Amino acid sequence: MPFDPKTARNAGKKSKRGPAKKEESTIKQKMELLYEEILDELLVNQKSLTKTERVKLFVTLSNYIFPKTKSVRDQFTLDKLKEIDNQDLFDKDRDPTK
Figure 1 (cartoon, rainbow, N blue to C red):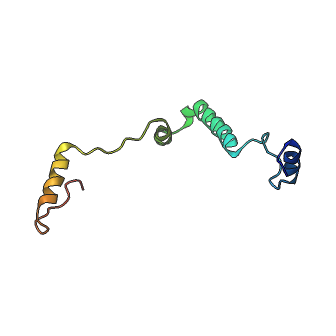
Figure 2: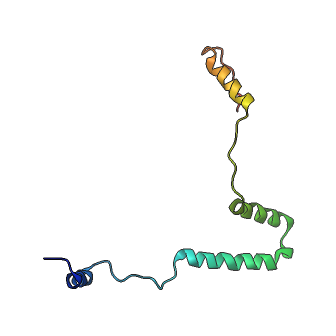
Figure 3: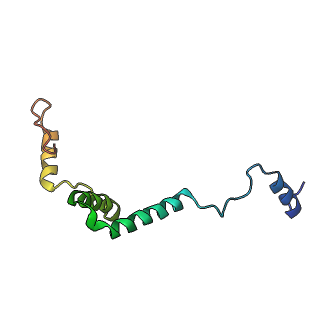
């Protein structure tokens, strides 16, 4: 049985997946609308927030705006780690990075 437009149409009618749901808004879109409404309300009513609430809001929002930095070890710390690795097992000091 060759696969042509007629057999493809028949196969599509037998499909158990159902019709595509393209018109319905997704949860992500609904959440974006909710966030926009809340942010708009916060901007309008920001004077009514306490200083603590403003700081918490600023810290929370900055986590989404600014990229997080990775910790970087300086050359001194790397040299100390190499020295510790070269010492005997019983002579090792505490890790300088902790």
